[in-house]
Length: 120
Image 1 (cartoon, one colour):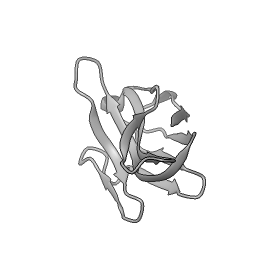
Image 2 (spheres, rainbow, N blue to C red; image 1 turned 135 degrees about the vertical axis):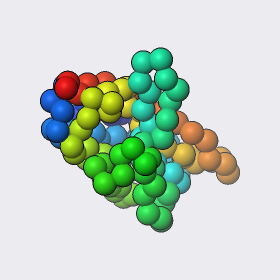
Image 3 (cartoon, rainbow, N blue to C red; image 1 turned 120 degrees about the vertical axis):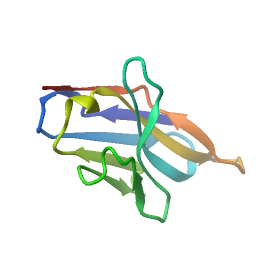
C-alpha cells in the first residue's frame, strides 16, 4: 500500500491549507485513515482520524479549525485546515490502517510526509 500526500506549503497565520492523501496498491479494505504531525523536537501526534464507518476524532488543539473528510470509494482522505496558527507548523503524515488482498489483518501504512509552515 502506498500513500501519496499533497497540499502542504507556507501560509500566514489565519490562513488555510488543504491536505490530500490517496492510498493505492493491493488494498482489500481500509479501516482507519487520517493525519498525524510532527513538529521539530516533538513527538508525532494525532491530528485527526476516522474509521471506516464512524465520525472523525480530532486533537483538542485543532478541534473546530480542521475538518477531516474521507472518500471510501476512492481511498482518499483530506484535511481542511482553517485559522492556521504558528504552532500548527509541522510535517504532516497521512496514515491508513489497511488490509491487503490475501491477508486477514490490518497494518498501518504511512505516507512520506508533507511540510506545513505557518508564519506568524
